[in-house]
Amino acid sequence: MADVGRTNDEPDATWVVHLRAHDAAAFNRLVACYERPMFNLAYRMLGNAADAEDATQDVFLKVFENIAGYDPKYRLFSWVYRIAVNESIDRLKHRRHAETVAIEEDSPLASAARGPEQMAGDAQMHDVIQNALMEIPCDYRAVIVLRHFTECSYAQMAEILHIPEKTVKSRLYSARQELHEKLFAHGVAAA
Image 1 (tube, rainbow, N blue to C red):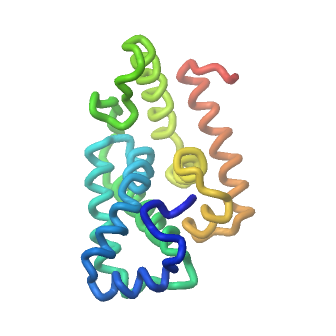
Image 2 (cartoon, rainbow, N blue to C red; image 1 turned 180 degrees about the horizontal axis):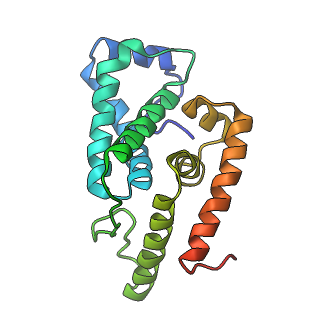
C-alpha cells in the first residue's frame, strides 16, 4: 500500500519531525494521505458511515496528540492504521447493539455511471456482505478489512496488528471461513 499524497523521497522520520513540531502543512498532508483509507477501514469495521466519520476524526486527533510517542521502528502508516483499528474496536466494544448498514446516495460506493437496477443489486450485496462482516469477531473482521478492503500485504498487516505474519495468515484463513459461513447463511452461494 503506497502512501498517497506524499513524496517518495520524504522518509517517515522527516515527516514525523514536522508533525512533532506541530507543522500544520505536514499534518494537512497526513490527513490528505490517510483520510480515505482510515475512513474505509473504520466503515468496514463499524458498518456505519457516520460512526466511521467520527472514528476517522478521532484517529487524527489521537495521531496529533500522540505523535511524540511514535516509535520509529514501525512505519508511520502502520502506526496510524493501528490507531484506526484500535479506535474501531473500542467503538464496537461500547456499542449496545449492531446497526444496520445502508448505502447513502452520496456514498463513495454509489456510482452515477451505473443504472438503477445494477446499483440496487450492488447495494443489496453490499448490505449482505457488511452484515456478515458485522457478525464475525473483531479480530477476524480486522484482518478481512485490512487484506481485502485496504489491500495490505501480510507483512503490513502483521506490523499494524502487532502479531507475527504466520498468525495473520492463520487468522485470515479462519476469518474467511467464518465469513463464508455467514454469507452462506445470508443466502449468498459460493462462486
